[in-house]
Structure formats: structure tokens, C-alpha cells
Length: 494
Image (cartoon, rainbow, N blue to C red):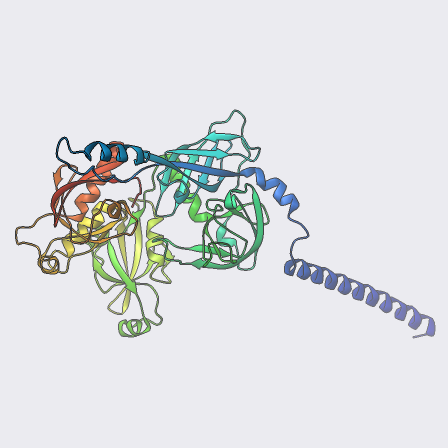
């Protein structure tokens, strides 16, 4: 090769090498910029705030609270010199018969015709609900439906113009470390935006049977309840519901209901005014390592069936105590507590496959999903446990726990052999029953003028009263002082 050709080849190679190094440098810069952007906070949340603040509303609810019964005027002999004195004293010092209590919260618009989502606890028991829009327009809201188990509620407001509304994102795609913003009405201050990251997922804080919260360090305080948590695309991925705080203020631990769970609930509330959840009819427990080894499972997964309710969907599908449910409707049951949520989200009446572990092998069974019903479950428990210890049933609406009478209960509370009714075993401090002077050991003989002998019958009477539009029920209670009637408010749902 002559010198000229060699020189040209060298120049050509150097040219291509220079291009290669330039391309590599460009790729490196792009990667470093992307990495820096991923690790650092957004430059500003201002554009996002301008877009999202009008979608969030403030909610105020008013509840009329009846005062407790006042002491009777002492019985004095007619013509007593103190008779007029006591009458005058009690008339002058008797407070008003009722007072108005107001609570504040947040919500967000989900349709252009005025549907609003918030937490159930924000509007629970309210006689009046008002929604304040971002432009300070205040509108009285109609309660469309609420679901205490998920702590969600849907309101409806009527306005002349169409409203801007929120879009739900896919909460399953959200990852720990993603940036989020929370908007709400903390301490009644109005539209307030705070920013943070997703700190954890799948949190169970023992607030309900379907706990699956997103945890965030975005500041959430009292009044933020019911407000939305947005991702950086401006999509709702959660409803801010609870905080964990020794002081009552934000310490960077807040919890939101994932949007995928929210959308399912509010769709049913808008369509039906209530939520119909699936029911399997089993009592389950966690699979420990020891149990897994005993049953021949390679790892401790699934939900161990401890008991099957008589007449329930599981019994009809031939599910047996000792089975381990590994999969329900094509969804793996990785942990015991996941099963109730999976079943609840399944359409009532739908036939699905259930894979169970039995006698060292997997078996596929077909089950028709039933509807979760508090009365049905209570009745099933009573039937299954009629020969054993009496099952305690929580009646949240009344603020007490009750049980059917059996030999164990008779001995514990020293009841007569001919005693009938339902025994009160615990009373919630500050609850309806406690305010009316009810105590453990009291016997509930009648509810709404009908005799009862099972806790499920109390639930039935409450349901009937609500359907009739009543806000209270009448109990005939046998206590140490004898029989008396007690009226209890039932606006708090189970």
C-alpha cells in the first residue's frame, strides 16, 4: 500500500472513530440527564396545581344532635314551698333540645354533571351536606350512596355549567418512590396542595376488612380526608383517608385508598346506591411454615379453610375444612388476607374456578359467588356455633356487642333458665348504647316491638327501619332495675 492510500485510510478510520465517540458521549449525557431527572424533584408543581386545584372541592356537613335526657324534677308534695322553686330552676337551666355539629373534609369531582367522591366518615350521619367549589361557589349536595366498609361515598351537586372532572389512573402501576401530590381542605383552610412520594404499598392498618392502602409522606392532615392523591400525569391514584400520628397532625405517614379499588366502589354507588360484594362463606386462617410443611406445600401461601358456613357458596362447591385456597378466579392468593378482597371484588352470581390444595394435590372446583350480607353471615355463624361457645357479634350501628343466650352465657351473667333475648356483652365508650345507659349484662328482649333471640334478628330490624326511612329503633331492655324502653340512633352503618 502506498503512503497516500495509507493516509486516506487512516483519515477515514479516524472520522468514523470520532463519530462513534460523539455518539457514545451523547448517549451518556442523555442517560445521565434521565437519571438525574428520575432522582430529583420536579422543577415546579405550579402547572400541575393550576390544572388540578379546580377539580377538588371542600365538603362541610352538619349533623343535628339531640341532647341527652335531662333529670326529672324531684317529686315534691303538692303545695310544697319548694315546688315553684324547682320548676323555675329547671326551666331556666334546661339547655336547648338539640345542637348542630359541623365537620369539614375534602372531595373531588368525577363527572361533568356533578358527581363528587369523598370519604364515608366525612359525611356519616349528616343531615345537611354542602360542597364548596374552587371558585367559592357553595352548593347543597345530595347523598347518592355510601359504603362504610371501604369508607367511600358519592355525592351529587347540580350546577348550570359543565364541570371539569378528575381522571382515574391505574394505581397498580404506581411504584414506591413515585412522586405524588395531595390536594384537600386541611384544618378548613381550603384548596391546599402538598407533595411527596409513595412510601409503601399494600398497607393494612386494621381499619376495615379490605385494607390495602398506599402510604405516602405527602402532608395529610385533618380535613384532607376524601381528597385525591394525583400522580405526575394528573391522574387520581388514591383517595386520602387516614393518617398515623401521635399528635393529630402530619408526621409524614398518610394512607390513601388505591384508585383501582375506588373506581369499582363508586361505579356501584352511582348505579345502585349501594355496593354488592362477593361472598364465599368460609372462615380462613393464615398458612404458617409449619402448616405448609404438614400439608406438603412447598411454601406458606394461600388461605387455610378452618370452617365452611352451612348453606354458603363454599359448601355448595364442595370446599372442605382443611383445604388451602391457592387461587380464586384466576387470581393467586399469596396471603390469607388477600382472599376476602379478591372475593369481594368478584361479581355476585358469577361462576368462577377455585384452586385448592387437598391431600397433597391441586384440585379445581367451581363456585357460584354469593352476596355478602351481614344478616346472612350472622345467621350462619349462629347456626354453626349453636352447640359451642356463643359467638359475639358487633352491632356497630348501636355501639355494642351482643351474643345469643346459651349455657355459657347464662353462667357468666347469672341469668335465669327461662331468660330469653340477646345479651349485651360489651358497650362502646361514647357510643349510642353507652349514652342511653346500657351496660354489659343487659338483655335485649324486643327490637321494634318484636321479640328477638338471635343477634342476626337485631340486624334485620335495623335494616327494616332504614328501609322505612327511620333514623332510630326502639329496644325493650331488661336490666337490674327492670324492663325499660331505649331508643337508639341507627344512622351509623355496619
